[in-house]
Amino acid sequence: MATRGYFSHTSANGTSFDRRVAQYYPIGRYNYWSVGENLLWSSPDVDAAGALNMWMNSPEHRANILSARWRQIGISAVHMDAGPGVFGGSPVTVITTDFGVRR
Image (cartoon, rainbow, N blue to C red; front, side, top):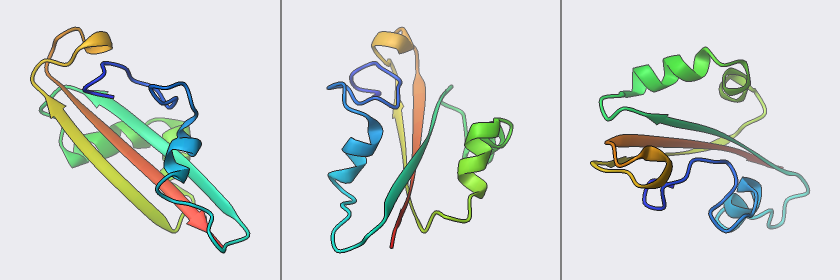
């Protein structure tokens, strides 16, 4: 996202985030599979506490964080000094949190 200058749950190629995540988190031998995603775009000085505070103040993001169904999590934080596209060439930090469960 940061490199390509977009910010969306939809992948750069137009596919939904669950299809992107499925490439790395397949259903395999399990009968049930589900994923959720929280995204954050902020100034470069955002820290973990600041990101969590923003998410906890958003009902949808808060629900993802507090859901008892998730069993695994993947977190990524990327900083760019001059983010292209929607970031307007400004410094940006993009944080992605993907939640998953397979049973």
